[in-house]
Image (cartoon, rainbow, N blue to C red; front, side):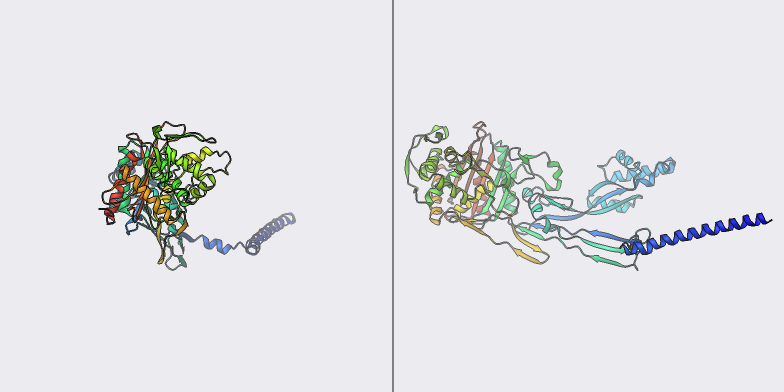
Amino acid sequence: MNTALRRARNRQMFIFLLVCFSMAALLGRLYYWQILQSQGGYQLAQRANNEHVQNQTVNAPRGLIYDSNGQLLATNVVRDDVYIEPHQFSVDHLDSESTQTDLQNLVHALHQVLPDISEELLNKAFNSGQASVRIAGPIDPTQSQKLHALRLPDTFLLPRTWRIYPGSDLAAQILGYVQGEQGMYGIERTYNKLLAGKPGSVTAETDLNGNPLSVGASSAQPAVKGADLTLTIDSFVQYMVQTALSDSVKTMEAQGGTVVVINARTGAVVAMAGDPTFDPNNYGSSVDKRGCLGAVEAYFNPALYCEYEPGSVMKAVTMAAALDQGLITPDTAFNDPGYISFKDADTVTNWENKGYGMETMTGVLTHSANVGAAYVAHNILGPDRYYPYVQRFGFGQKTGIDTLESSGQYSTNKSAGWTPTDLTRQAFGQAISATPLQVAMAYQAIANGGSMMRPYLVAGINDNGHVTTIVPQFLRQVVSARTSALLTGMLVSAADKNQQATIPGYSVAVKTGTATTQGISDDQTEASIAGFLPASNPQFVILVKLDRPQATIYGGTAAAPLWRAIAQQLMWHYGIPPDRP
């Protein structure tokens, strides 16, 4: 009896000790969580609170982009994506005949509204077993209305904001496009921070299902809309230029082309086009398109990125340098037998070795004589007087336009490997690379009395009521007003005698270029023409460049007709009166 009692008491003691040990362990855990973890900064209350508090980011509406006349170039629309919930039709449930029938009815109904998605693909999506699958989007508003009206089970629509471009490919290489929330290329990239705005947030207490509680605590930080931009581009001129360039590329059987139209007085870009181009609404389909003779994707603006040897349009820069330093006049003459040999440089010849006898400086421009340009650069200017003017005209450096660009390049007498041959060739636009915009801005300085302006694309910024107007910016005095007037007269004389880009009633100052590249056949040219009008009171600078045209390879016959057509349209569109009888 005593033995049985002793055993019973031992069991009671064991149970008592076990309970005490468990209580001690529990108290220890409570002390750990409530005291130690709380003192360490890890608040249990906060963790518990986070279980039923949701934080959601509210995307900011992206800023709009307008042309100079207020026409919308880039805007936003809300479109629906279509999602399904395949887990409702798991393999276990599909054994039921009624479930199979319901699924096929649902698939058929979706296919009727979304005909681009086959029933086979829809069945695969429903058999995936995933919680949700996006099957389409963005869909057009009519399709959204039909799906809303059908109230299909296990199907829901999720609205999403999309960037669209009403003009399709209009000014696409200027604008760029948006991928996700990030601007890609052009204005969309350069001004992405301004256009994107600032996202907001919403914090709210929710029930077990994640639904906001009407009586729960909540807070909101509203999104700040992105700034709206107004560009210097005139949509009418841009459309006209793009259409005319595309037609000219086809007619001349060229590989591509570029046009730049600049306000001669302010530096504002009126139009800027490249071919081939792309549609930013469907940028993915243009991934294989190439510009700059295949060097870059079509998304890049060729006026800013495509460096090329400008050819004879550089002869105006060579003449400007000599005129400005008083070393020549328009009537200064020399003998041109069709070639010129230098002791320290290679022999230079004219196109087809033509000689022009006693030739004036104006005649050098009229005949586009390489010999005359090389003579001026080598025998009259020399490197110390030539290269400072090449730099003043903006070559080998970025123009300062308000978007990304290339700088071009050339070597000087202070460069490693330079020879006097580089100087003689640069005088007529070889052994130097430039962007179309750089060439256009060189002619802008000539047109504007020698004053170079900074080119720009954005005319105004409206940041939620805070309006900033971009004013024209003077960069530097490249040549004197007298030099500008003398050179303009020489270019007008050359245009009148060649009749390549003349317009009845208007004086034009232009220079053509037919550039060849070393190591490439002479019939693979960069045909170009640059100039301004009306010459007596310049309003617009126009540059046209065609890449390796085949129908005719010369600047005067391939590029000049397009230059003339654009110039004529500009005079009509802006109502600029003639300056000639």
